[in-house]
Length: 447
Image (spheres, rainbow, N blue to C red):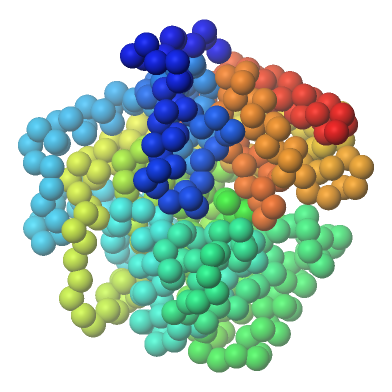
């Protein structure tokens, strides 16, 4: 990390500390900040960012999986500037060439036949829209969701979130039933083989549906993001699809974090479960805009067109965000960043597994491509250790590496750098993270 600059304005208070005090005075207490001393990031380039004190960091979290290609990607910067110089805003009341062009590309990439695309401003809003479509199409407010899931922070999205740490209210406009299967290494089926695990989860689903009627949809993340980058064996959702189809239940694949090739093996997370075809609806956001506010839903035409009332989106499909997403998607495809995620991510996972094998705090290193989770536990008890995760996150930051954390207790390190990460940067980050893990283990041992 570079030496920090002196505080601006001659003040004895570091800029971030002053800004933190102002943040606490006017923003909600529940608005989460990382680090004991929160960081103000001021600019970035490639896979690196800088804070207000001049410190440089290797970014292994990408604005929560949102800076998908690179910080300050020239193609995106140019597209935004050129579109902003023409017109900033029109709304969906008017024809928009960049919105139509992006919808055409996404529809073709989605794998959904006769696809229609609706743009939103976030993943939360995308999932809200998918729930609206599914419940209207099926004329039911019953929804199946996965245990340990997370789908956003709105009232309806919180109502289908199976993670208590991110669900502040039990009130909901939906009747939600939670299904086994999102977490392979925990729960009552953890000791089973992959085949037996899938069979047990399907039996659980069958039993649940035998006690209800008229369910609208199953919504599921192919890899659970906030839940700690957990996933079922490949093929689980294909097996679920056989059951869902018999009941006429729709499948919504929440690709907000798994889309656009981040898992390396597939462009969409659902493709690891493609045995019975694509989902009925697919939601996306985060990486497609590379930091610009873009989300959306892809659905079969009969589902997308089922709404019987008028609707618009004031900010969804904004000319500027559409131009940014088009440029970003073009760059990703032209440079095979999915392939890079598979190659570099595979090496990074193996490097972390090797390091973790020597450390009692590392329970599991899991993931695909550049979507990697490191689950930490207390070496003495084997219980999940959020304290260890906090120690590692802080120690990594002090060494110049930014990572995230998640899981139901906050004991999982979340690693998701931009998909252009180089092999050299992956090795550098793995080295820093190994040092941080060792320091955290020493900290746990000493008290």
